[in-house]
Amino acid sequence: MATRSLSFFRVLLLFLTLSVRSNGQGVGINYGQIANNLPSPARVAVLLRSLNITRVKLYDADPNVLFSFSNSQVDFMIGLGNEFLQNMSTDPTKAQSWIQQRLQPHISKTRITSIVVGNEIFKTNDHVLISSLLPAMKAVYSALVNLGLEKQVTVTSAHSLDMLQTSYPPSSGSFKEEFIPYLQPLLDFHSQIKSPFLINAYPFFAYKDSPKEISLEYALFQPNQGMVDSNTNLHYDNMLFAQVDALYSAIKALGHTDVEARISETGWPSKGEENEIGASPENAALYNGNLLRLVQERKGTPAKPSVPIDVYVFALFNENLKPGPISERNYGLFFPDGKPVYNVGLQGYLPDIIYSSSATTIKILNVWRAVMGLAVAGMILDMGVKMKMR
Image (cartoon, rainbow, N blue to C red; front, side, top):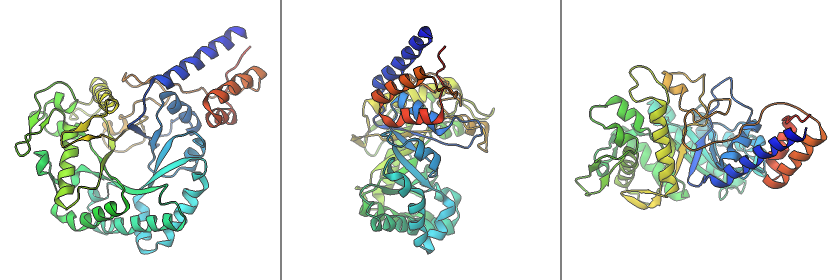
């Protein structure tokens, strides 16, 4: 029993050391759940605490997740799905009902900082859905105002780079003409409520489609000669920064320099189809490892050097039920058992699911509670994690 207790304390000390050593500022994680083999949200809360990741983006408002992260000091962006937009755009009371049912029960204990209304709406080319986006966002914002939450929770939406007509050179970035009637008032609204414009940016797709024109090093933040924007003489040594600045140029072309762009998704798959050139664990490790280094260095893009990039990495886990090519199921930093898919310097701790009521176990978890705060340790006790001592 003494040996096993000592072993557990060593694991606990390692857990705490990793938490202090890692720096989660400037980076968040997308927590997707299209899978049937993922650990419970309570166990994920421990994993993320061990990684010192304090910003999470959900694609819904899963009450199990939000409850499991109560008092955890993790900031959540929660998603309001595309399927809700049309009804909310015509009946704003539905937005208030959604917030009262999905957000209010949790916000006193779980830090919800943003509602992402819709995901990649313009990529659908469904003009009824596209025209519903802004009215739905306004309905959600009005509901937050009515409930006195508008200063605590921002309203935004996430978009695909497919909305750009031109992205090269970055200073010539522009939106597709057919989307401008929708984007102009949308940007006006972002400016009015001071919320960021979210973009899902994937250099992988650009490289996969044009491997002869785009160097792998340029896509992976590796040393390369880069490119110079002939209009601005700004030098770009990686594609992600060029994509973000192209978006800034497109926003500026519609009259706004007061709307901040943030990266709501970016990542690189560790596996893919034969034609998905570049999808490998080695390249995924280079992309995400170099990206995390840039975030830690608080780098800005060439056009916005004083604005550190704000990134949510896609994704926390490989998701085995995602439709589409093999790559779609292989963007995770971790396998569902908590093991890293590849090494980017993030070594976390995912507790086992076992149960013990032994006094020793309770005593150790009480130490954990004192060191880490009530929430995570309380969740472990509630879910019956066993650190069995004999």
